[in-house]
Image (tube, rainbow, N blue to C red):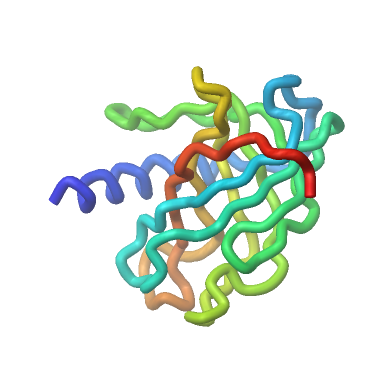
Length: 160
């Protein structure tokens, strides 16, 4: 029950932020620059995978590269988050990563999306927290729906 409520709140809030996603990078704060790795907990109930591997490199010029699940990030940028979360939604970040996706998000299940929006923030422990949602529709089958997940806080690691 708690997970369904949390997932619903996450999807509604991220959907509101997705509307605000626009292209155009800016130089991020120094605390965000670097290579980040970790996992994301899948928030949709129509995917068999429960976690996806996430690897992001945020560069000082605002460009972002990496992978989410099996998909590579293409033309990634970070910029200030212009969105305001809906009332009662607790995820508010100061920055958003937006990128095109290259390849399937979950190859084993044939889940492919065109774009991804990742609201992010460095937390008090120096980890990168946030969530993501992809392009897609609110309704339909797994080939059409928005895919969302919450980042387990990512840890800064040496660049590969």
